[in-house]
Image (cartoon, rainbow, N blue to C red; front, side, top):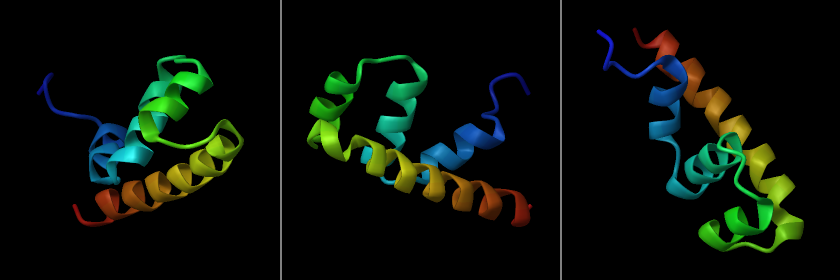
Length: 68
């Protein structure tokens, strides 16, 4: 179906909100300072947040594909 979310979207929906939001905003080319304001962190911590979010996304994608 056209309205069915893809694998990445399903995985993003499983992440805790700050991680999902940070990745979505980054994908939308939102400036880093704005992303930090939304997720409530200092800009120096943003790269670490992205690394954690990407690791969680990878794990969620793996779980999503193996449970089918």
